[in-house]
Image (cartoon, rainbow, N blue to C red; front, top):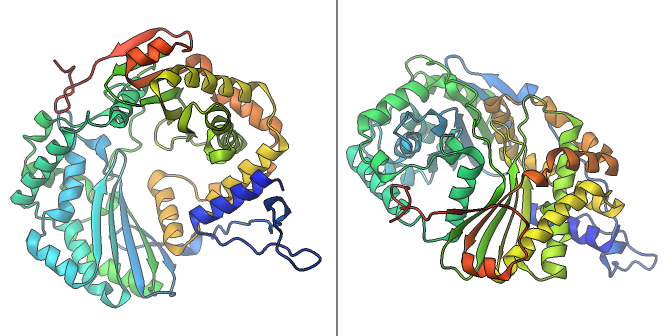
Length: 495
């Protein structure tokens, strides 16, 4: 094992909280002085059989239970197909408001302030939120207070009050956050990048505005909740100091608070129809750094959960920019040339819609153009040349660490299996993941890079002092499209 491989393994273990195995002693019994002398036992991620862990509660929802009696703590997480993709036209933000007010807006039995006091008295934590695809409610409590905590959880789930005062306070908070949208160049980059890749109509790229939030009323939340916050849209994950049979009985009794199971939400969410247009895009803002994104729309699973190509693509991504200081982008753009402060890439395969392939970095505006050019060179080099054996082994080690961390605790395991069911992802996709990953060859990595990395389709977005970026030159020969800075509350071009 090389020095870079040893350091990468140790760093990954430290990041995910996995203890490093003891190094094999030398003949004299001393601990090796250099990383390349360390030897590690093969990492074998433990993927449990999900069958005995899945349970159906009468009148309720599927529940995954993992017992862990190390500490007197319990986590209950409820996943719902009730994300922002269900927002009605002109009401972007309704799903997020509903999820937030399920927690903050009181219940039929407890007004908002009283609910807060009851949660505090139990030393429990209850949270609720929604993103593009899902809503999530999470309870953490002492196992000795599980009954009382479940009562509050199911009050929130089944009978939220959506009190008017917390609703108006949350709307004001959302608008105040909107007002700061242009304060950080990275937030501008995120918004414009999503619009370029997905178009403004897809849920991934829809941003609520102040005029949309203002008229949302309590009755809108009540109707959204009644339609989508029902057992038919739920999957539960329970982990910690519980007895499986007992906790299932407790859940079954509390699901009676719902009036029937309800109807499933439309699924899956719609795919984007927008076709990204390659080119060089810029937003001119005064900033000491230029924030840069490079990439194109990528892949979605489309049911191919155990395709060997996914593992080769993941290895390619690690080699390019996912492996920290061992990655090619970091070596070329930071270590060798000093052009950027940090650089990373992402090649996530979307489970609901295509995720982007992207490279991101921040640089002095005078260095941004050359950094873009060199980054695209590294993408082409990955397509055109075979990765080294050292790069291949290092990438696999890091990915094995990530796989092990996915099932690194009872809580993570329960959440992963519940998410599988929520997504419609077969549990079997995890079973052979380690063997598939270890079997990936350098030739397969190059073939995957040629398939999924398309530098000729690249979009480049620069947010920063465009005059300084352009004056320095060294940009790739792409057509330039200036983008306007937008009004943060309404999002048309600012005057």
